[in-house]
Image (cartoon, rainbow, N blue to C red; front, side, top):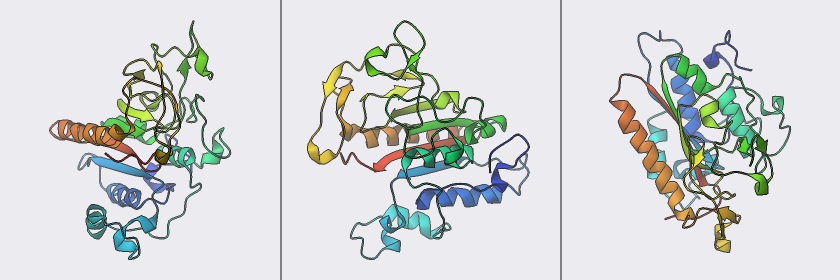
Amino acid sequence: MGITKETNWFSGRWLYKKSIVGALVLLMASWCSHINASQLRPNIVLILADDMGIDSLASLNDKSGIPTPSLDKLSSQGILFTDAHSGSAVCTPTRYGVLTGRYSWRSRLKRGIVGQWQPPVIEEGRLTLPAMLKEQGYATACIGKWHLGWNWPKKGGGFTTKLADIDFSGKIKGGPTYRGFDYYFGDDVPNWQPFAWIENGRTLGIPDTQLSFPAHYHSGRGVGVKGWKLEDVLPAITEKSVDFIKEKSVGEKPFFLYFAMTSPHSPIAPS
């Protein structure tokens, strides 16, 4: 079901990857749909774990061998949806479905994921979950992996899909802050160039250095900011998320945080 001005988001179907945490948010959203907005506007944190399956939780897989105490506690205090089904089990379509409420094949991307330097998959003007919440007075933030395409600035003006023509000093448009989010901090796709932080449409530093990483990281290589380290990704986006929650939790406006983790997807680079 698509999102329109006349459609109640929470009465539609929400596409999910094989993520346990996402199901917990759906339950909260469904419950809140029965409460008048003037009575309660809860803060919402949506965590999308990249390529995480139901068997990744120790509490649901006694053969895992990997302890997950925090997620086990979260699942024991919430509700698990263990028979949910995704319209697509890969990256870009999942994110499109979660943020728009539409089947991913209704977009221009009919299969697979959006490629490097490709334009946005979420259509301009499309009502998204963060945009809908902004209309209800929410502060919105996307922190982590985007992987839904950008309009990369071209040297001399316009946009380009060719690395050699990109002006990294320019504004990168079409990303989260153009699709309903007030704030974005992340690295787009951590195992793809450019290896750089992007904050509100601008790279923090100019990607002008060729970078490569150990083979066991299962990462790509290419242009990035000098000194960029894959080991810094998870700690940095976690810290930014915690800071956002702390800052907004003392304000008058409710907040929506979309925390799009880069793990357990490759690159495998724990700190």
